[in-house]
Amino acid sequence: MIGKGKSISHTGASMSYGWNQEKDVQVVFKQHLAGDNPKEITEEFKIIQEQNQRTKNNTLSFVLSPTVEDGKELSKKQLKQLTKKFIADMKLERRQAIAFVHRDKQHTHVHLYVNRIGFDGKAYKDSFIGKRSQHAAERVAKEMGLTTVKEVQQEKLNELKSIRAEIKQNHEKVITEMKPKDFDLYIQYMQQSEVKVIPSINRQNQLQGFRFEYKGHNLKGSEVHRSMSGSKIAFQITNNLERGLQFQKGNAIKLSGKTIELSANLATSITKRVLKAVIKRAVDQGIGM
Image (cartoon, rainbow, N blue to C red; front, side):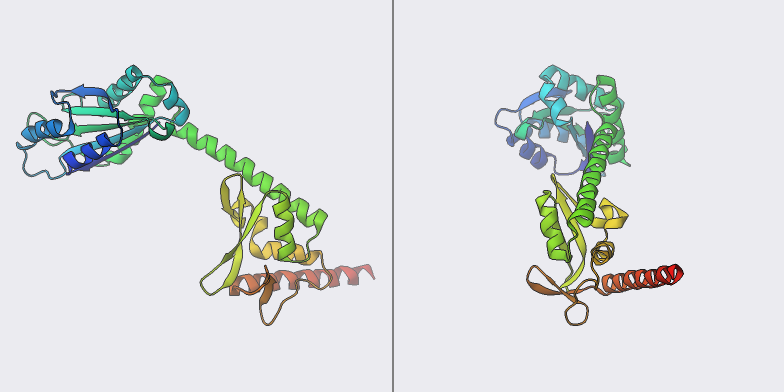
């Protein structure tokens, strides 16, 4: 579950917008309030807020978002319990508050509004309110056996690790088995493995490297693996050829039927790698004589 929080000044407008987003709004929690709609609740908030004219952002706005799977299973009673636990963790039990649930797009989330001004006229300290909301939501999720942010992040990291490994595996297969002789063939062979290779072109119409799109992920070559930067891919292709990549005029190459210049960094890096390989081959041949 993710928790977000901030202080706002536009209580009525914000509450009305959230309330009207859902046709049949379900109020899952209410404390120290009698009103049944945004206008009435805002007026009740204002009565208390008039005791403290100095505080401009006088309402606390929170969004509590369980994971999609958890949200499908949570009943109104459980959402009330979740909200109540969150309020207790944030020490907001003695303030006016209302929470209603949205179930739009199958993603259940709770909108919670709390009067920042207490019955004693004092304002609730909102320093680091966003970070505190995250931590409170994390603790409530653990207590209720819901998926926490850290668990979601770990799942995403594990998925990304697998995606990176699959892209790299396809890349190595193309380089070693298909032996493309230029970037166009490399892109074509990768596409056959369902990996879309997207040239990264800067504003000067220069090729900087490549991005890889696979199973809903879009990653730079260097994010996939350090061996998949633009210069290293060019060098790997060059190793499959006797004469290396075919350059047009200057540092230009043919890519998708167009003449594209290499960025200065990419061209320099390719040249250095090719030169090192040539020297190494020459030394190896000399040693072998």
